[in-house]
Amino acid sequence: FDYFLYIGSLNKDFYSFHGVPKKKLYYAPYFVENSFFEKNLNKKNLRKKLNLKNKKIVIFVGKLIDRKNPHDFLKLAHKFQNNKRIHFLIIGSGELNFYCKNFINSHKLKNISMLGFLNQKKIREVYSISDLLILTSKYETWGLVVNEAMASGVPVIATKESGATKDLIESGVTGYSYNCGNIKELFSHFNKIILNRKKLKTMKKNVKKKIKKFTSDETIKSIKKII
View 1: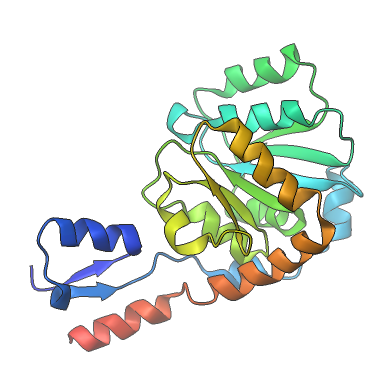
View 2: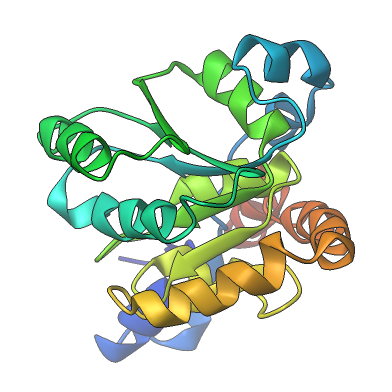
């Protein structure tokens, strides 16, 4: 191969580890169409539709499979079951669908809802009214849900095992990272954001600034240089 396009820091390290020289490496950040998620929507109506008026909304977006680890998210909801100002949403479907429903029912959780699979337009609506995304994956090459959330102005807590964390999560600025399965660490970071209105407001501005650099423009620049 003459050239390599790397999507992020860890991908660059991967190529370097396998002997690809620096002069062959060009940056092509993983991106979503930010403008699609930035669209102004009627948030009041959307909250009303989901019966979530005046609540902080925390979301999980992904397939309900073991690798995506919804277990951490469920444990977080369980921990905050007595806080009526916070509501948790699970978006996605998969083989752990029954497990998640059973966990919610057996623990009698009233602070969490499962919305099932949603298309991009519907997910955009949920992002627009959300306050925090939790990415709990045991392993993620990147994790485009982080891009989607940030383009929507939503801070993120993500596992260190997710590729996007290295490039998009600035501790205390755009969110926090934690070791997958370390629930104590997850609780700690969650408290720092969701219970601090001022910090949450600042973070929402920070993520929008951060994600502006993750577009197709950088890839086009790299391809032009190569040509």
